[in-house]
Length: 459
Ligand code: 6PG
Image 1 (cartoon, rainbow, N blue to C red):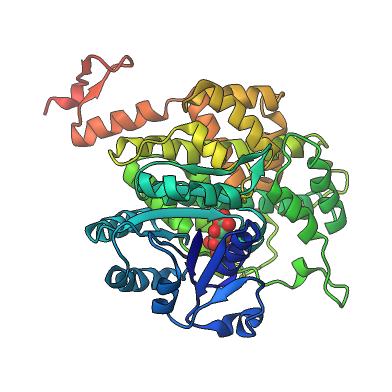
Image 2: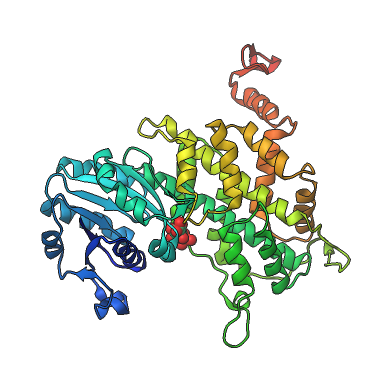
């Protein structure tokens, strides 16, 4: 069996190397071979480079499997070109970070030419692409059956099982990847906020923070993101300067977090920590206005100590709340008639290779897979089991930061999210009465059965 790849940027090239290592023959076309030195010199072992799209398609045996790993703004152009050259039964798999609704449109277009389509979310960056990424697939079942072994071969493994899953209709794979990325933003921001608080409130140095995160790798909060954060905080350049002291603080983003929020708004699902993480990225262009303010005139007091056990709980709590928000979004998307996700499949795809991977996720996965659905009660049970002191340490940690004017939007929003669900409050009641007063909107009693007509509803 041979495979064609179009696009050899860092993801495409490393995916090609991975596929070749699994003994498939790979033909590839890259419009601009200058993008990579090895490519320019045609030095990638066993990769057959072609000079044109037509040559590539002539080399790949029918029914062809053509994988696309292209910049977002090139995908439509190439697909349009392919519709003129490919034949019925050929398969086009888009492995880029595409918007799920675009995958649905591309599927329709390609199907009208009797060409099969797969929208494939790939996580793990170029290293994952080379050594085993997490793979999230949606599209033609027939195409999946013909390509399943390739994707399973190249995917990361969790206890010999591939971190790879077919979720159903076109768009479903990219939808799961989109939510993955939204959660990724929240987890990254949560860890960055903890780092900032340990530095600015508790005066830990880079080495101590890195060590703290490294210790967490032995606990239930262990994760890929913690591991890399432990490394980067302590890393220095050739002049013995910490990278963290020299890097520009304006945060980049490719738009997948914004897509997650848009999907959540469309579905009416609250994902506050993902929203805060995206919002912080957008707002980071203002990070240069650093006035060194000391709100409340509170200065760091060397006697202030954080509780050693709190960090493990803080990380676990924040990871669990952000994951829950993402899973809830996926679950709610099942009300769209084109999706039909099973929660256990999501965990399978995220079990290895992806940015979200970690022991914390295995624990969450066990809790939710056992019950086969998403229910706030399970989040509650999970947190009760893993954060033993009723969140006291977490509240103290967040408050210490807020008291000093230290920013922690994701940590705060996760706590607010949890408290909103599981504490006793009268926020809904107050707002319903406000709506009733000024808008005469109908309201019901606590059981949601009988209408209530306060005196102000009679004009
Ligand atoms: C992954 C990542 C990967 C990437 C995104 C987000 O799962 O491998 O999500 O797709 O990191 O490009 O990048 P930004 O941070 O630039 O939005």
